[in-house]
Image 1 (cartoon, one colour):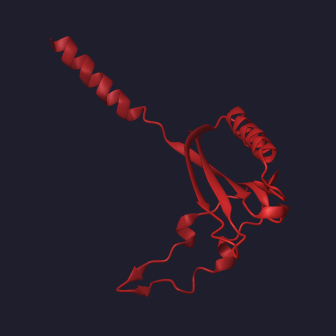
Image 2: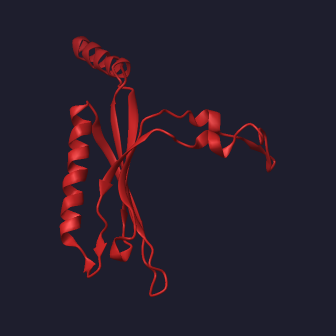
Length: 151
C-alpha cells in the first residue's frame, strides 16, 4: 500500500513539473461576401510581435491612468503576410468554385503551420452579412489559433 501511495504522489508531483507552457499564433482569414468580386479576401499572418501590456491602460474610478502613453499608431502592424483568397460571390451569386479554392488555400496554410511545429488548438468564426438591398457589404472571418511548446 505504501508503494501505491508513493507512486501516486510521485505521478501527481511529476505532472505539475512537466506542465507545458505554450506560445500562440493567430492566423485570420477574411472572406468577402460582397457581390461582383468587389470585396477583398485574404489570410493574414502577423510577422512582428506586439506586447499587449505596453498597449494597455487602466481606469481608476472611470478615469484613464496612462491616457497619453498609448497611441493608436503603436498598435498598428506594419509587417505581415497576406495570402490571396477568392470572394464568395461572383456576378451570378455564390461561387462554389471560389469556396473550394479557398478551402484548399486555407488547408495549405494550416498544413504549413503544422510543418513548422504548430498545433491547431482553437478555431473561432463570425460573419457580418449583407443586410439587404442597399447594404452590399459583408465578411466571413475565421481566426485559427495555433500553439506549440515554448522552447
